[in-house]
Image 1 (cartoon, helix red, strand yellow):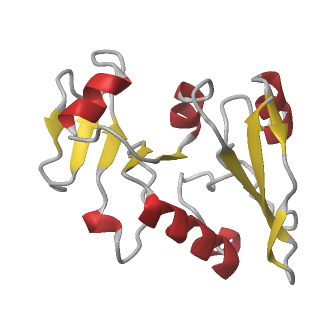
Image 2 (spheres, one colour):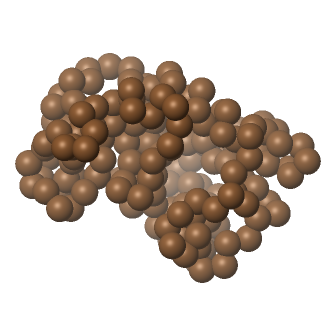
Length: 168
């Protein structure tokens, strides 16, 4: 699960090591891609260029509330068109969710970093991928041709890890 039943990330799912790993990756990204419920809420967040997926618009447009954000409806513009509109021609792109957004990019990842907190339970929560909890995140990634690398320990006390999954 990546959120509770209200589409919010509860404090029980927040760990310093994971937060630091995530924040450092986003600081290296040329573009952040996410849905309307996902936002990293960090000090550097307003400075980051982003694409926000939405079904509420047709044409690519600048978000009136965030000048560094482009509102994008994938049904009406390609990812390449959205990147061009956002003035991003190269660099790392960080896709931070939610499940529909992750699914849209499943065939494009060079690495998907799967963080896991094995002792946190979010009954009725939002799965990290379309099809979770009917399948595990590992099954979803493997079904898309991804293979896990060696996990990194982010928080020893809570056994929180992050595992790189790459096309196999």
